[in-house]
Amino acid sequence: MGSPLENPTIRYGMGLSSATILVLVAFFFLEGMMQWLVLGFAVVEAVLVPQFLKMSVEQASD
Image (cartoon, rainbow, N blue to C red):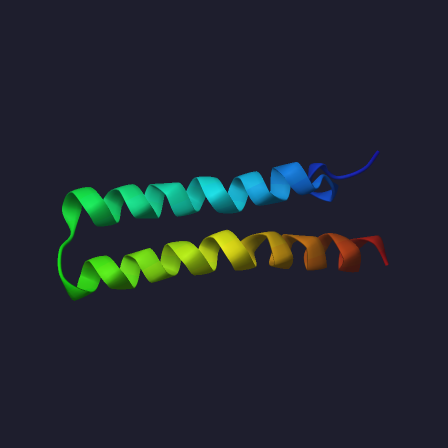
């Protein structure tokens, strides 16, 4: 039985959902430079988390 992380939809969904939470926190609770920093973290989260999860699935299957 395969891992749920083998499905790209799950991997990208995890990255985008956590990035969405960061964006909401940045807009509703932060201001100034801290807001921009958290928005940058959200972009990194949305782009890199699916790639890291893909690499972990590939290494686990070896």
